[in-house]
Length: 191
Image 1 (tube, rainbow, N blue to C red):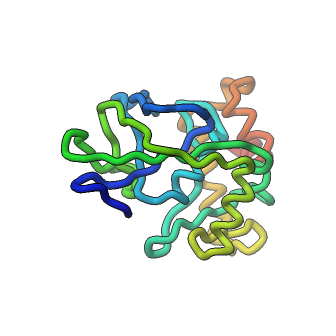
Image 2: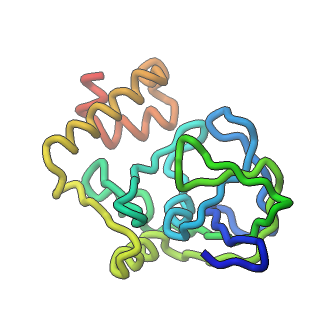
């Protein structure tokens, strides 16, 4: 992570270009904030919004400090990121911008105040950027066809829980309902 004096560099991924300032937004009905990360690869994952708020679909974790993206269905990385343009913004935050760790995502920091953008990287094809990160060892991708039965069962249970938690079968025309129904038809039918 780069620093400028006492300020530290952070990143923010967005499908929206041309931002000069990151404004706090409400996400998952939490207090409005700006999400930041010290990891540019993680920000690149958020440069595409696979589903509309208040839902999210970012199946990744970490192995050490390296993000690990898990494909929850065949060719998920291509489906969600292929041919899509996104932006990774970078900014420096100092003591004037109070950052808090997001308890739901330990690599994320949140600011309740707007954050000025210092620069950005345009990702003309987010998939290509992610594949380059993978080639460089900055991202690991667990392809669906390499997952073992325990991992597949975890995915099945996680998706079924989402369907039940948000009562998605009661709103089949909802975009998140359609997203899960199209990509996980067996789970949808069993939920």
